[in-house]
Image (cartoon, rainbow, N blue to C red; front, top):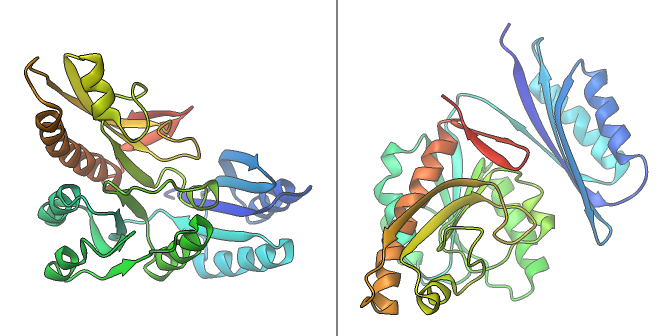
Length: 279
């Protein structure tokens, strides 16, 4: 029989016994734990379990039972079942349109549905309306309050993949841990060089001869997540900073779409912080 894999994320206040409670639950259901990652930051506990089953699993009962355990343990738990059905995509944006426009232009070639576009402001709402895709503005200045809304939006639309299309807010572990290796970001440099917001300016000032972009999975460490795909372009010594940005932004958009396609086609496997491309 075909192996069934279930991803389980557990987030909440750190205390003893949490790991054992959920690993024992997986064993009691006849599951084999293939991956387990856990972390604690400032009293917040996060864990990702990947459990495989060789026997058929009653998905509804499994989810119901684990939610009962979550309630008992006072943790926020979600499950992600790998299926062949169409995946739901959320695109997070701020005000730069090119990445969003490129994703929408390639929507038919994605093995998934763009279910919602979420903005930190309403600048790009007309693009979403034209594409007939729901747009939600989350304008809260407090990141904790903003992420409470983001979590609810992602639950409402049953989101499988989040694409950060030049989304200019830093997501905290409380959000990131809920979507392990399911948040794709684009960064305007060949990471690990030039992290942070002003990558093009740093490259311009250093006189680099090649400038690149990096698509990567998002972790709790800024711009340090597993690298999916990178591309680059040559810089002419006479190029202005604006010319470099223009070249880079087109490459960013194309590289982000490529990473999304690879993820949605199940071509990526993350092992020991490295992304391996399946043949």
